[in-house]
Image (cartoon, rainbow, N blue to C red; front, side, top):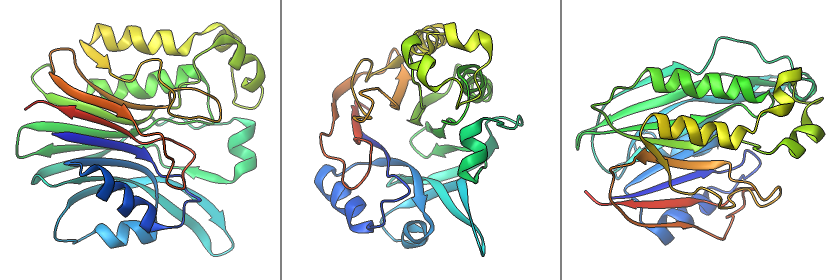
Length: 246
């Protein structure tokens, strides 16, 4: 089973970019973040895919908020899906205030007919490491050890202390946030929950040469192949693909 994860980038206005990526990779499950409303409309009710979606964020316009979505597509039947909040805490960072963005802090948990449970997650970018850690811990609390789970999405893990120095003032860091090695903390969290980050130390966000994008599975999962697709298809992120043996 091939799983594709991609932050499409909210300024990526050409649906053809996504259709071309899907045609190039032939995935069975697709997890997308920052999806424009017009792209969502294309897939809702479309015959080939079963879909689950939630609001990712909104951008304030004169006419109101322009909404962008997290979207999960599966060629397997989606038995049910649940939309939940990552956190109830408000972000008060300078970046958040200046951007005029509305962050919904929602994620998707979709149960497929084949027994797989697929999470589509977009952790906040305009906040501090402790907040992102809390958000992911909240997601983990909704699962169980019996789930055949995939955790997909853009986790926005900046990861290194020297990056913290440059972004802390803009992103609402508290004093203790500056010393957090966010990547190391998340990897420890994955390990404690018997999870594997299959794209560890690989670049998915080329502008900063960091891994933002994830497909995380249980450590027992048998992986046939994995790759970072070195083409952005109009985004600022590379798509990632994992082939899970079923």
